[in-house]
Length: 530
Image 1 (cartoon, rainbow, N blue to C red):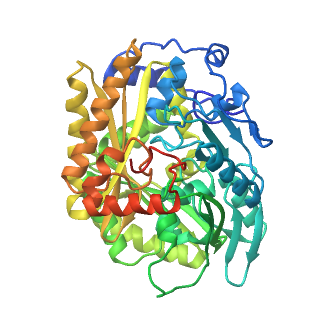
Image 2 (tube, rainbow, N blue to C red):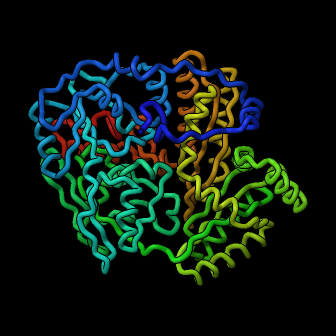
Image 3 (cartoon, one colour):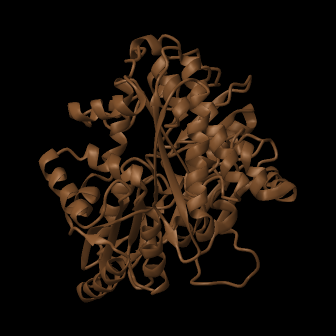
């Protein structure tokens, strides 16, 4: 069963050995075990619904609680402490385009705000109800999960937009295809959510981001239906898909999505290479990309993330032997881990692997085989569960990300980490920070930073620590010309920084577009733009 106040299925527990607890104690201090509010106590606080009756709408308090928040750090604080100041007044589960249209018309007539809801995995406040005198209805798309059509010759498939990642891949693989889109939230997030937030999967180097994979679809808006036909290419004016991509539910509700497929790869493997430092790793990645080699993933960790990865791996004897081997090759405290993914025809995998490893060897990289890569691949969707365990030990964890060009990448990593460290020191606290480059391009890279800090005894103090760090890092990103979000979207948390990227005229254009499709302002207000 899904956790109501944390990540994922409540039957999955990410256990950590005593050595990990000691490791965290040395880095940031001992955690204070929080006093979380029970489900029963929180349910007693769910207010009475303000919605007029509708046959598709449930006002059950438990269902409303499950849809009250996403997975951002402030969301977790709200849920764990029970201090939730806004709930949806009801939740509807449409099963067809007609159901969605019916619900939008119901909302227009009764002056109700609508929040489209996919898997509830947003980490920047996309699905949070804004406290208002206006009733709020959440539209849960999970029952619209069918494969509607597949064209094997054109390698296109059309799904209802509420399909989850595992269900989508399962249905495609039965036909010999994959979408290849694997964000870390894959197990719980949905196709419609990926489109609405411009998502990026872990193997985007081969398959592309969602904007490459989204070929067309159907958007139900307050003014009617917008159909997006799919073409291999078109020069017929501006691409209307771009209005829907990243629209975050402000224009309407995506009910169908046509996606571009790839054959299931004949072979797939993941390797690990260690470098003496981050700069050697960056140069190796750049040279692999410049050589035009076909990989599905390049993921480079900083030295801090490498140390953290090894500390959390367990198997102390095996890790100790690896450390000694690397030390003999001159790789010590500053060593950095690069994971390389290869997929496709077996002969091409072998060729690209050989060429890539030749490049890494010339830059002092030490290839240690497939063990690390295979373990990462096996556990890549399990890692978010660690957040539950760390909270219960008294530690908060959050992530932030951006993208910038290669010349700016090392400085961006340094400035983000410095901003986080300086901000938390104002509270007399320490923070453990680690970063990796998870999505790389010939012209630049994403920068994905995780930061871990102690929870305070007081709820507001915990939020103050988080706000200080989030604000400082966001300001550092915009000051260096990075995007405020490479893959998480805008939601509420990034909205204050969006104008730095879009400019006054750009923000006006987005606002005008929202008003055009939704003149009464019923669609997901308070997200993306004011």
